[in-house]
Amino acid sequence: MSEKFDNFCSELRTKINDADKRIKDLKANTISVSEKAKVEAKAQLAALENKAKEQKTRTAAAEAKMKSWIEEKKTMTHDKIAQWKEQGDAKRLGARADLSEHYAVTAMEIAAAAVDEAERAAVEAVVARLDADGIKAPAASKSA
Image 1 (cartoon, rainbow, N blue to C red):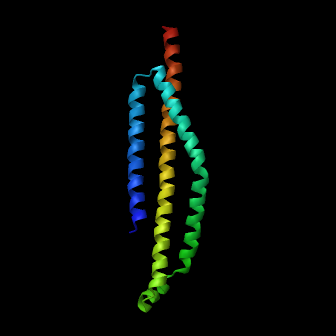
Image 2 (cartoon, helix red, strand yellow):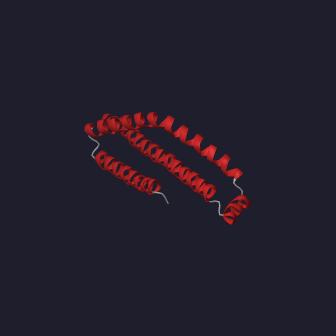
Image 3 (cartoon, rainbow, N blue to C red):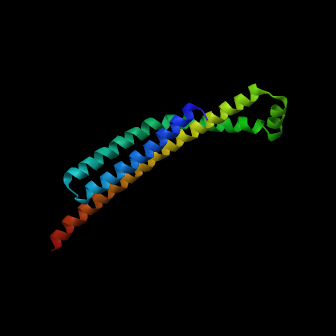
């Protein structure tokens, strides 16, 4: 595999681990349900929403690239590939390998955007729970 592909795999693993850590930290901070924790959670959600808006265009472009690659792949039948191998057509086989690597990197870019969206959704859920629990607590103390 290419170095670019290997680097992207490493970056994706790091992104997933970092998102997991941030979500766990957020959950731990919200257990105390302080006003500060609510403000921090909402700030984190706002930052993630801004990031999602920025990524939307890049993700759409990546999806378009993937569709293009799929169409091009349809022209590369198993018979043609076998023929290229038999003829020793390194140029075409190399071009196919390059296209496949670009497709893999693009698919990982989309996966990375999905990780970001999953993190945003998790933080949104925490904020929503904080809001809901914040309403319940004062209502419960009023009825006591």
